[in-house]
Length: 345
View 1 (cartoon, helix red, strand yellow):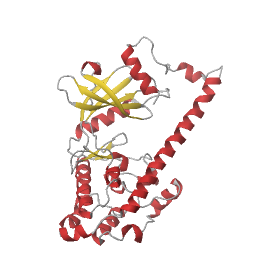
View 2 (cartoon, rainbow, N blue to C red; view 1 turned 90 degrees about the vertical axis):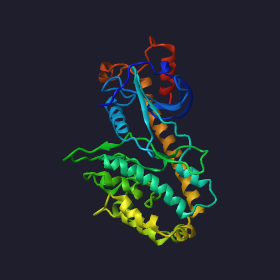
View 3 (cartoon, rainbow, N blue to C red; view 1 turned 120 degrees about the vertical axis):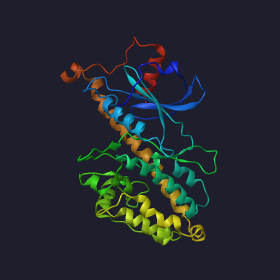
View 4 (cartoon, helix red, strand yellow; view 1 turned 135 degrees about the horizontal axis):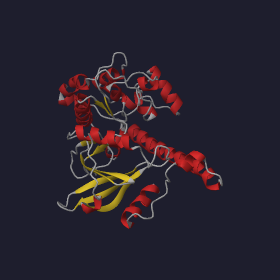
């Protein structure tokens, strides 16, 4: 069971700069007062009532905490502490400062297949550990594959963001339609019973098309190809590994078994194969643009949802029965300021 500390997080950590923000919270750099160690604090606004529109459900945050506490691994972000107040939950996480793996690769002039194999090995080690605990990530995509730091020439992979993760129990039949369109498995789209094997289809999408609808159709039909321009320098063994991962029926979730032939391949052959960096950089730029476009689209949608509320003189009776989502002016100034920052994200 997840343990949430009722103490004030600021009694234990000095709150620093904002590292990132989302729909329901912010990530800030914090410094532990006792040791001086820096961590990342994820401030999450929690719904005050079932019919509230603002914030996350506490049960969802509790599930994420329980999963993170169960998967301590070098290639998975570490959860240190959890604090809870009336309005928010604060997760104290390992500070992952190396940025996204894809951005790191995009800055390189050349990437040998042997280097890609080392990154892939770390990803599979973290993923394999999760799966051994009957836990699936269900949102494994480039944005959630980070590097430990920017200083080391060989940084560690860190898998992050377990908001959609699920722990399977004996005899359970679990279904979900959550995820990012170009990175989800066919069984998610078809609303079939899921397993940890659904994670294997996540990552760099070979199904990416002009629209989400076309992308989803490609996933269901397993419609993909190894474009000659993109894969001209890729070894046949690496292509074979990708093809086996994409097989839906049956699809083995023993990714390390499939990966072993590549790691055993002679180093000389691996070093002759490389990644097409020109196409990779184009893909990464397109991915970043799509993320920005989707964010603007969502912001506009939220504005449209809020506009009728401002001009309405007769609020919905159901909303009147709900506990107010406005801030509590009796709260302590420091806490109130932080909550205002979160609410504005």
